Amino acid sequence: MFDVLIVGGGMVGASLAVALKPLRLKIGLIEAYNFGVVEQPSYDDRSIALSYGSSRIYQGMGIWSKLRSGVESIQHIHISDRGHFGAARLEAAEENVPALGYVVESRVLGKLLYEELDTGEIELIVPAKVFGVEQDADSVQVKIERNGVADTLQTRLLVVSDGRDSGVREMLGIGVTRSEYHQTAIIANVTTAEPHRNLAYERFTSSGPLALLPLTEGRYSLVWTHRDEDVEATMQLDDAAFLHKLQEAFGFRQGEFTKVGQRAAYPLVLQKAVKEVAGRAVVVGNASHALHPVTGQGLNLSLRDVAQLAEMLAEAARQGSDPGAADLLAHYEELRRQDQQGVVRYTDTLVRVFSNDFAPLGHARAVGLMAVDRVAPLRHWNARQGMGLRQRQTRLARGLGLKV
Ligand SMILES: Cc1cc2nc3c(=O)[nH]c(=O)nc-3n(C[C@H](O)[C@H](O)[C@H](O)COP(=O)(O)OP(=O)(O)OC[C@H]3O[C@@H](n4cnc5c(N)ncnc54)[C@H](O)[C@@H]3O)c2cc1C
Image (cartoon, rainbow, N blue to C red):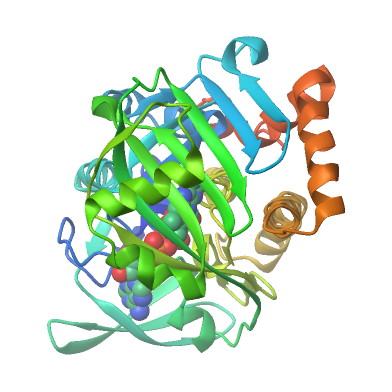
């Protein structure tokens, strides 16, 4: 019998498993793909903006120093609205932090997480797929298929982190609310004539936000949102025409765009599980909340969920109590509700207010951006929201290890 069984070894499930390593619990991680294979959907060409708060969570887990050489820091953020006056600037120095955030390629993060998992504390059940879940008062029975053979594993707590289209969430009978943005993000790494100097851009355009995140080796990571109907045409452009179109949308603040790498497209929706707990199972990561990537909040929010759950499981382990107990899970869900609802509202409002050609809204946005630029408390609020510092600070979020 496992104490904790995690389904899904993407960025969220793997981060939770690493966080739980020091606990005296029997922990397993089930993942459909072998570690390091290109098919693994979580560790693709995407880059992730980790907030300063997330860097502290990884520090608390003891892995930040190992990740540090593979990340680039964000010292300055420039926010603007195409076709309208006004811009806002956020500065790490003004917030008294070493960086507003860090940018890491998801493959680099994945490689480190798997190295950390491969040290014997966690039982890795890989590659294996969950195809059924049943539960009674004392345990969850998880049916898996491994190398063509069916097996059943038992656990006191099941953590479901199998992604946005979570099959296990469905098996548990947990529904979702979903709203379409009719937008798709095109991602690619690009190079500009001017060095990035650790400056990130968030530029709102009528078709959706365009972000440039400073990356290692002098590159920028581009996240460029398009209306669904325009994606195919942009994806089909040759590199020169793509760079020309990007230059038109972004302007010349970084000089000319000189190079673009492999492109990929991600259709965007807002999806939220109607509840996170069913019996002895709890849903986390994209399985619980999948957001628009504007201001890069999705993984950062999930890492705060991970930090909270890990702290509560550490406490249960110390007291020898049941990690799947109903009151523990209900308390977890309650503690995380406000942050989750706040981030969903924040990202959804930004997308809907800024992806709009309605003229009066354009003027209001210009006033809003100028206010953020000139009014220190507003600037500070936005910076702290982005850095993940406005929420309850768990031990891991303070950069401290779990109490074992
Ligand atoms: C374009 C884009 C840019 C983004 N940028 C940022 C950013 O800058 N900052 C940020 O914080 N967030 C960002 N995000 C969000 C971030 O990518 C997600 O929050 C994160 O990937 C969610 O990871 P996950 O582990 O929950 O799910 P996934 O990555 O989907 O992982 C799920 C895992 O479960 C496994 N699995 C599925 N079914 C089964 C099964 N039945 N049995 C066993 N295993 C199974 C899969 O193989 C997979 O490994 C971005 C998202 C997009 C689309």
